[in-house]
Image (cartoon, rainbow, N blue to C red; front, side):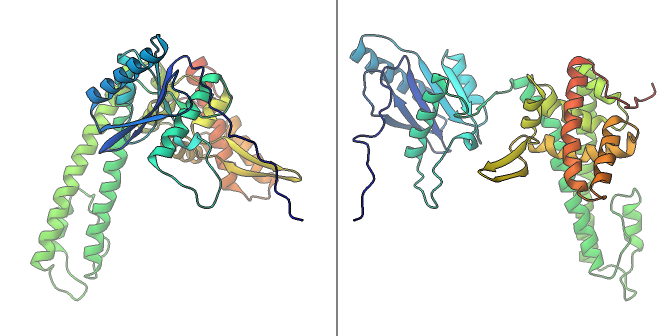
Length: 384
């Protein structure tokens, strides 16, 4: 006979002996969904909607929740608010903190979800899940979620330069490729749009069948060159601002520039994207860059899945590039020798795997160098 597994008589209850009003915010461009769990209100979570960006309406709703809770319990409770890190950035978090409200920003990927193939997902469900995660976090449960440490407005603004330069470089590549593609369709190769004599050479170009460039094509290429030259000017302006910023940071960023193989762009990215933060240990440093290992162990299965890639992608990409350059500029350093030995043991295979491990070691070494002044073993410094 088929038997039915024993079921609990009732689902696990939510704690109702709360010491604060717990609120989650589900943010979108048009509406903000406020999900709250208040003392004296039982296990049911209340939900309210305000217009997106309406801070006054949000604070008014908070005041109403506090008044209702005071009427039920005779006490005045503080708020604990949680929201997901996303498109809205950190300005709402700063507004709440300026109002004296305890606010938390959570990494949405760190909240556990059902592993069913198809699962319901709505703002209502997500809002309740955020409140439950906040309750568990405040109870001190480990690894229930990962809260984001919000940067200060100055720190957030400081990293704009490197990010803008990356966007401008990508646009420059697209314009260069477009010019080359237009000319290649006419049998012309070898034209370099980044050369200073690009406009003079454009006049003398001939198609593969011996004709001068058609007028409309020549006009289109000139307009592409106009946009390209504007980009080149903007890149120079951004790089000048970056150099001024590096000089203003003095000790930490200047220390990175002293190492052979690290230029202004790498130093600015390393400092503004990661090394300006406080880390307690090397594991936190590697985890922030998404270079932490992710083992998979279950029963007799024990394998490594590679790095987590859950951290800062800009910092991780830069470190991979820097690791390859480190082998060229610092071949006698302890890290480069470790890489060569590891690759040799594997029969000159798995270089890409080893370079990721080198990037992780290099990040930790640079962190120790910037924060504690520990010089990387065997590293060559630039001559003043």
